Image (cartoon, rainbow, N blue to C red; front, side, top):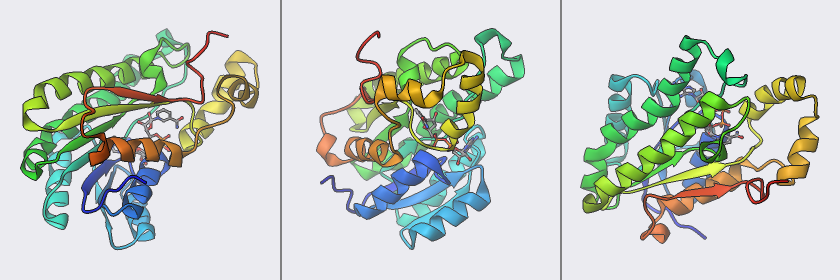
Length: 253
Ligand SMILES: NC(=O)c1ccc[n+]([C@@H]2O[C@H](COP(=O)([O-])OP(=O)(O)OC[C@H]3O[C@@H](n4cnc5c(N)ncnc54)[C@H](O)[C@@H]3O)[C@@H](O)[C@H]2O)c1
């Protein structure tokens, strides 16, 4: 079992979904976590549900000052910070050139700039900890072109490249930086996209998922991969991205 004893983690977008599952597993394995989310009430609700090892802060990951404040709050609450999970992200599901300029900018700001700001503002405490680890939540979409998910795929591809470059540049500091690339996972994000995908492609989403990845992944399965990468068990792992997709990317048909 992966141990996270004593880890002090900031997790963005952790009020619900994957971020919440990651926070829950991290606490089970001995970590303290700061739940940072633009949904302030949801963050507080989740932190309360997770117990005394969890704290909450409102944080819009596109706002540099709010990200810096979330890092500072983590350091103050736990006496340091050694783990950053950049999880906050949004989706747009529509043909690529139907995206308005504003939609494109909004998605890139949250999914890409948010990851950049999270890493940038965390460097000081992560270096000071002597065991800094960053896990960026990308997507299987970041490794392929994906009809209907064009802006999203581009943003998640950018997350992989930010991960690689950060890992290479930060190698001398000892900070490890990795990315996780899930296929479809059962969260509110998938609940939102199912009717849109079905209405455009005319195939039941369940049938698509059953054929290509057996079933939806669970948030817990993504949390397990994230916990491994954050932990000392992954001590020689940096600059890589790890796919978990029930085999979706393994074959062409
Ligand atoms: N669910 C999937 O199938 C799937 C697959 C691959 C990757 N992902 C990625 O996993 C991450 C989490 O997705 P999820 O499925 O849990 O989605 P979700 O919509 O259930 O949760 C996303 C969380 O991010 C928060 N958030 C949104 N914008 C924010 C902002 N500007 N600042 C701070 N927080 C913000 C939301 O309030 C919410 O709590 C995302 O980066 C997503 O792209 C999800």
